[in-house]
Image (cartoon, rainbow, N blue to C red; front, side, top):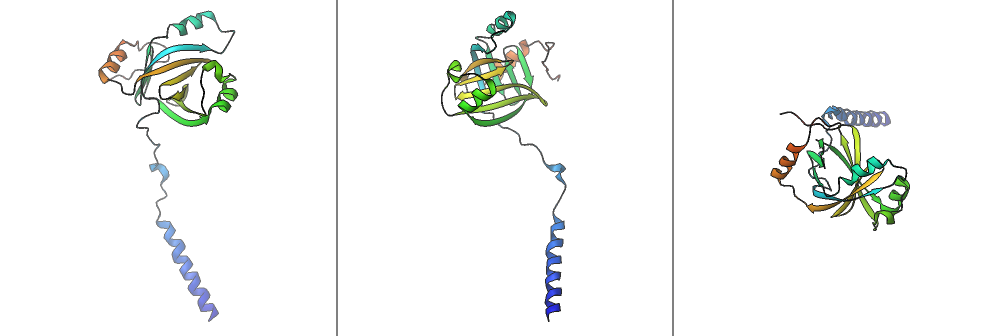
Length: 185
């Protein structure tokens, strides 16, 4: 009797375990999630540049100062900062504690950036797999682009970007500039 129970139990286990083989194990079908809207989408304007490197070349300082007043367009299929374009960028977003992140990563006092609060939204921007810059969103209308040891403060003008305006600015950008790629149609 005990051997019949053992055989029956073994048969049931075999049936249960063999049913697992019906699962599709082809993992090549997994796709990265697409972002329908980034936390920083919209039209922004550059209002200030904060330099963190005291020994920075003065020509760099003046070139960054020229950005003040220029528009920044952030969309899923392109970012325009002044006269630079990142076509089809990739984004990685995370939420971090303000004081820990700013002091540890950038070795700067948050008072120098004139920000307060508990948390920040961080959006890393990639051109293909190459890191380009980081956007630090303070609140809905204020953010920083951290680029080459400098904080470029941007303030939101609009949540939406008019396609005609975006296309007009896109046509003015010189596709021959270093680090800029424009897809030919």
